[in-house]
Amino acid sequence: MNEVKNNNIILRVENLTKLFGTKKTLAREMLKKGHDKEEILKHTGVTVAVNNVSFEVERGKVFVLIGLSGSGKSTVVRCINMLQPPTSGKIYFEGQDVESFSKSELLDYRRNKVSMVFQSFGLMSHRNVLNNVAFGLEIRGVKKSEREERAMEMISMVGLKGWEYSDISSLSGGMRQRVGIARALANNPDILLMDEPFSALDPLVRQDMQFELLSIQEKLNKTVIFITHDINEAFKLGDTVAIMRDGKIIQIDTPEGMSSNPADDYVRNFINSADKAQIYCVRSIMQTPTCLVRTRDGANHALKQMKINGVSSAFVVAEKMQFVGILTLENALKVRAGELAYQNAFIRDLPTTTPETHIADLIPIAAEASFPIAVVDENNQLSGIVTKASVLASLI
Image 1 (spheres, rainbow, N blue to C red):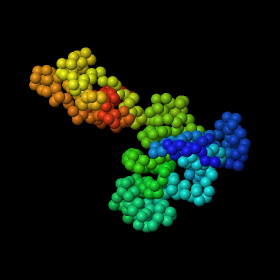
Image 2 (cartoon, helix red, strand yellow):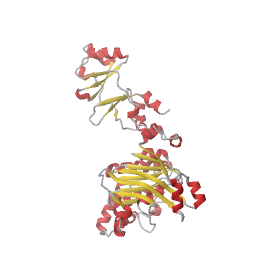
Image 3 (cartoon, rainbow, N blue to C red):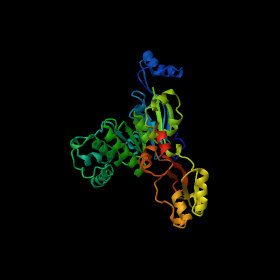
Image 4 (spheres, rainbow, N blue to C red):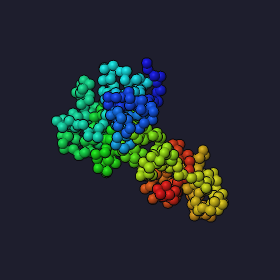
């Protein structure tokens, strides 16, 4: 029987357990009694790959599963596309129990609903770039002109325009992975499953691919389930991150939430090596401006506010807190002396940021800024300010 559909949740995993071995009944009993996976393996010969895992994936978001080798993260993904059926538990796609699919429904699910991107690329050496990308559409029976048009579109999106007819052997590792992503996207899947896709690439290429994935996700609004063992990669890519250990999920949270409130010492130790600038957002370090004036105020009021607050500049806002710019002490004195009109005294076109901006993205802006940076929302309303000192302090 199908579950009630929540339109915002595209995938739900409930109490997923995957055991490998013959004595599964005995292994399940030992799990219920609290035995760990080493004890179960020793007494039953059964490997506990996934143990009672539950999570939800929101449509259009990047959900990252992170853990060390043997934590069970890749097994979870293989259960999602039914390459390995669960020992127990349920997986719901769009509210439907995946395990209840008929053979034809499961085939449709794998061909059209989920696409896999592998660490090893999985490309066919006898096909050029275009034919590799179009392969999934060819299997589906899409006519040649249509599948090649779609493939060319995806090739261009991943930055390989001009390489359509190149042999796979002539491509670098990063380029091959771009082909793999383009092939997965060509089928227009609802969910992109990515199992350590960038781990074989060198660091610079890996950074490029991470940026490429975020750019593609922004354009296509795809749901991505991403597997990695790299905490920086997890926090850079994930809207939500789940840390796994010994087949269990230890904590599910946003990168910033997990960093601020780790569930236990294991999570805390796991994330200690993470680049904090990639985790924390401006929201966590922004301050309320101490000196604030409005465009309707005059220079005398501005000078009085600067004196009260012990500063040499004021942030200027219009009606409804719309950020305008900064008024310096020097310009305010010129206005009072009649050398400059008040409305012309504001320094405008200053760099701004948003509460959701990662601190890492703000560092080069802060390094060049002459004043604290205004934090504004989508309507350009002033939410706070960020100083160079607060940016530096967040990195310690």
